[in-house]
Amino acid sequence: MKKTYNVDETSNNMRLDRWIRNNIGNLPQGFIEKNLRNGKIKINNQKIKSSHKIKKNDQIDLFNFDFNESIKQKKTKFQPSKDVIKENEELIIDDNEDFIVLNKKAGISVQGGTKSKKNLVDIFAKSKIFQNTKPFSVHRLDKDTSGVFIMAKHHKSAQLLTSLFRLRKVHKTYLGICHGELSSNSGEWKNDLVRYEKDKKIIEKSRTIYKVLDKNSICTLVEMKPITGRKHQLRKQLYEVGNPIYGDQKYNLRNNQKGINKNLMLHSYQIKFMINDKKYTYTALLPDYFKKLLTIKRLRFPNF
Image (cartoon, rainbow, N blue to C red; front, side, top):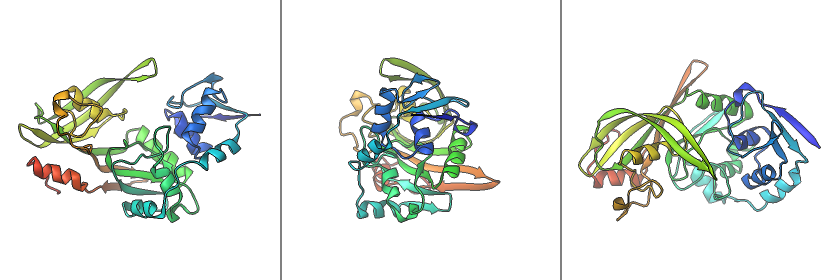
């Protein structure tokens, strides 16, 4: 049995696995990956990876798609306890009929994947807030990054918010504490960032506007406003200028590993966007470990 979908404009440049969750159902990542490998999901009659960015008018075909198999997998997925649900509900900054905004804790993934079980999508799927609907992830935030995160409550809101992020109409501000003293107090990083999907080398252009809020000879508190949204963009850019973020276990310099902080000092501080001429601004308070390092390193931040 074959079922065909055509990609519309609102889904242009969306990851295939995200499109599947938004349009087919909140299926386990492992289930999606397995069906892609087996050729049961194809784009324009070609096998493709879950990270592939779909385009407007692409044809997505599902062949002999067994939803019963996904149900079996869901039985073994992460099941949040009442305490975990309550703990994350207490982090909510705003709750309206279209979406929720929360101050995400570090150490928790946005959605389930092959390497991560504990995630916000599964947690809030069990919350009373989503009793008559389900949570939709509309943007990314690294597992170890804290701060402002948005989840849509229904398909229409998910499409709108995803489009805003894709069209760069959501303005994000991050705070980071990095090793050493940045050479310039403000400017823009423009990099060709390299990543690999198995043996395939992918080069992506990236842009970030930055401003130093305080610094000394040991470290710097920097405000960053990414224009593009590449994977690990801010972490890679600071590493490439020789000032990796404190606590970054992936992008670091060997001489900075002694006594490294266990927490990644990267915080999604603020998000701004507009819907139907209404302005939305959300700010996430700094986590205690971030404030503690600011004090230890004698860095000043006016809003702390």
